[in-house]
Image (cartoon, rainbow, N blue to C red; front, side, top):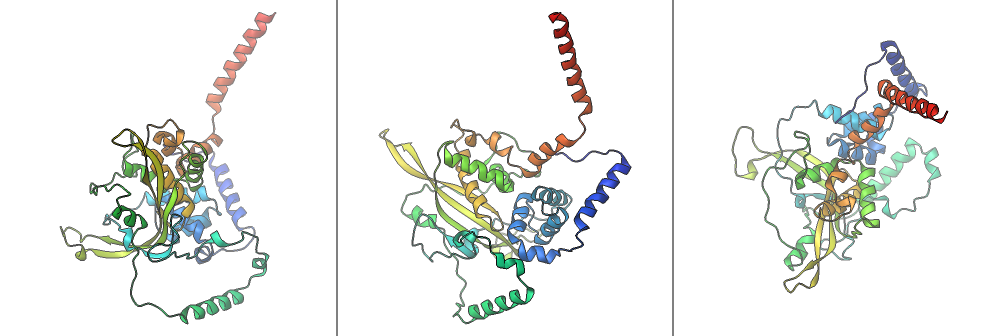
Length: 371
């Protein structure tokens, strides 16, 4: 169910839209799309993830048009996405082929290939930097030049390095259950409405499109006490993954014949969740399950929270709300939830007057009986 504004008095609506434009322009300052892309990368990534459309320029345009409102920007980008033709389906993306920019593990100090801290605010002091108030373009250019010179002076490797998943090493030890690959086409909730019980592909798609705050909040609720799931992050990796499509109108088994059409940045998380199961002797035995999270751009908190909820939703037998797929999946959608709340601003004259008349009638009847 989606909600959009209804039509009212034409003159009043036009005046409201003009006032909205005036509100954006009255400062007489112009924020360029390139400026948004260069300085608000985290916001751009978040909008693309929730809108399920990877196009940084359009996400930046939506942010500008929405004056920085996340909900409105996602609404705009999803609306645009619905107008686009679907020409091809990509081949399955193999994240082992990711060109990693950042890769850390909270489960192991030493992992093959090492911990790559990359770009992250995790290691900053989180104090306001008042020097940014007076930052100039000349200072920025000089800092970038100095940093690039520092980087270029370091020895570079000529070979392209791919990193295996941390969980792969644990699987080799038999510590994780191996599952056969499911090559069935995934269900697509943008083409068919979500039905319950949902398949795992539907759950994962809904979670990755979910509002970042909502997904994080429910993931935190699970950690805090609703089920008390406390995973250990096996691996967080951020980087670019290549996208391939098969040759059109051809059936080609050889993947080397696929067309490379570009790459997208994603954040991928695999969390290790301890669970207690019964062994053959009916005794309690500790095992690990994997919770999975992935989203466009660099948004590690959301991907971790998604991995928590993924594992929770694999166990619907639990009585906690974070294990109820209908509760979780129907309340994290950005457009649906904000649209439903916002529709309360629209006219409800008839229904309210009906309720008001009922209350008045009851009050009058009670008053007569009191006399």
